Amino acid sequence: MSVLRSLLEAIGGGTVEVIDLTAPLSPETPVLQLPEPFGNTIPFSLSEISRYDDRGPAWYWNDIHTGEHTGTHFDAPIHWVTGKDGEDVSQVPVTRLIAPAVVLDFSAEAAADPDFLLQIEHVTNWEQEHGPLPEAGWLLYRTGWDVRSGDQARFLNADENGPHTPGISAECARWLAERSPIGGLGVETVGTDAGAAHSFDPAFPCHSFLLGAGKYGLTQLRNLDRLPVTGSVIVAPPLPIVGGSGSPVRVLALVESGAGR
Image 1 (spheres, rainbow, N blue to C red):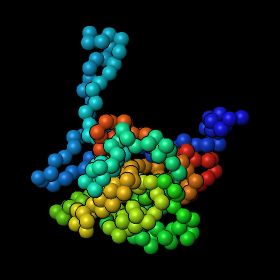
Image 2 (image 1 turned 90 degrees about the horizontal axis):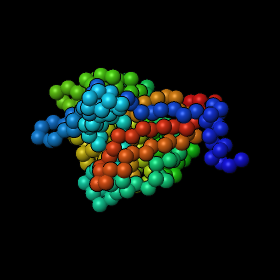
Image 3 (image 1 turned 60 degrees about the vertical axis):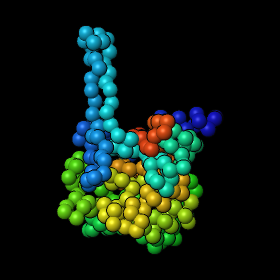
Image 4 (image 1 turned 90 degrees about the vertical axis):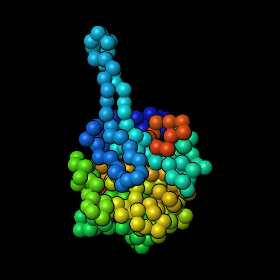
């Protein structure tokens, strides 16, 4: 039996489970809010072209209005100034869009402190217990933040000092970019950086270091609690937007049944 046929039979028979890690995309999807004078993306919306009426009697369709970085989305290297000479989203090799993943779960720490930051020692301690990070794979950083995704205010969690959401320290971001074998970072928050990352050195270090190193980002993931710590495979194909800095994406995880957390 061929490998592909075996995979299809495993999915059809339930021995391989397909788990959707994507947040629904609608006008209620939370979007990043930058302070003035910076520009902001638009919320997602649809505008109807026809719906079984005199504009088109047998068909329904819409125009889509959204930003590249709205909802669950993919960050390409060109999204950040440090990666400006790197790949746009259409140039990302398709073989890098199917990759192994591991889950680092710090949801308890983030529940206790919304400004919790992942440090290098958190990652190295995890490796001592579970083995090395996957070559060209995804580090999925679970903080439990997806439970807030139905409410923009709770999701962004901002006050007069700015947003308060968990993330990664500048030192750890640099280590992941320069010293680890991963191909990308996936998070449950609105972006790959912490809410307070505007005040870090450098500002927004996950964007700066990881995209500058030719690595990728996935944001606003959900259902990471359903994945095993190791052993899942992520399928994350963005739209091949020529010149695009990113794209909404449907992120799927393939998990062997019984491979619980």
